Image 1 (cartoon, one colour):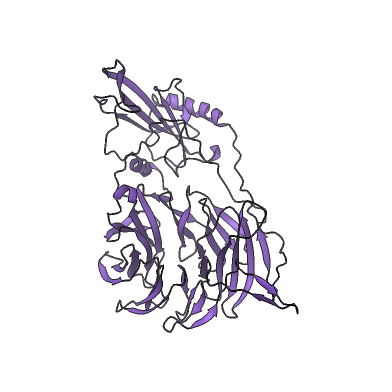
Image 2 (cartoon, rainbow, N blue to C red):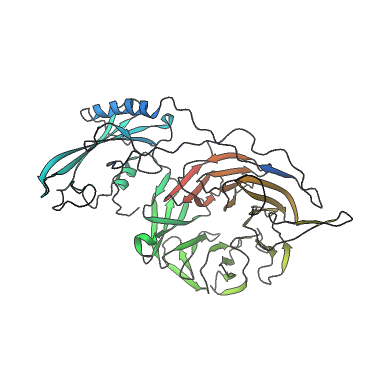
Length: 522
């Protein structure tokens, strides 16, 4: 992570101390209610799902009690011997500053993703003591100060000091301006956040402040993850190039990175043999890169920006979805072989590469012949004839669709925007489809205040990973569509995720500026 962000990680708490968010853990209670009757022409199992509130871990002491006990350790830490070692995450941060009217140790966690969500999860205490020394007098007669920040890190709960550091601020400004204008500033160029992350023992995430992580693709061997990183428009004027970074999934170390001309990088895809990475961004080009060296191998210009990119399983084609059309690119000649009208922003190749499934259904790649018509389960309007026959309207579009690894069934997701539930939450539907018989196998009705926009099968097809706009990742059992596991850690919505080829890990990216690696083995 090559950035120069200057964040005073827990070092200065100018405003009121922040309160750490409540932790959530998966509930063990069943998440699906008894199947309900739905008027259909055939018997389709349907169940209603209302998310059960997640459990908040029991805290043995109140925040004030924890502040008192941890603060006492902080007070002693500045005169205690140091036993150097890397400190463990998650941490609890406490700060004390002489600028307060009543100086006291207060909990205030300002590095996202690292702090403890409960007392039981604390592994380290970071103490930040800010003192000040008068360094002059302003023309208005008020005092000007220089600041000293003393930092110690303690292992919890034994209180052993494992790290100590002192940082001196620069001189106060000559003119007193704005809030805090009477104080000096800490050295510019110090990447304290980056330094802090390097101190933690085996973090399970990567942090990219001031950048946006748009896409992730895992190599066919599962050893590497390709990340698409773009500068945030507010930070770079949307003019700097994006980067592709290859990360070792064991060590989380960068193996290679290179610039991409597009200022926003929407999607990445590995070729089936792992030798090529295709990228698409906001310059309407699809770039092909040597995955070992980062050298550009080719470029295809499209009429509009590539939003989704996938290789066919046989490696012969690159499918590219844009807002207006879908294109098939010959992977050898890098020429456009076929194009089709807009069919949504999601698609899947069948395992034999002979069919492309989209929000409308399935069709043959080269001819465009429709061989499977998929309708929207959320917008179905049943019409019952006098003789009792039931017919359905079949809208053209659904919100999301994905195909199982063996190609035997697919899952669609749709929102019921206008369904009257007499509650404030919204209604969504998850439907399973038999790709051979073209019949819907089941429909699950979700009542929730969040929506899924990612559907990702595990390699064995037994689990479906879905995201929420609250940052959680839910793993659904595909035989029952019950949530069997909830992954909690992201502080903002998850924008993309992927399983490793062996199904033992999930990589997720989020607008909280982190890439997380989740182990599914424990």
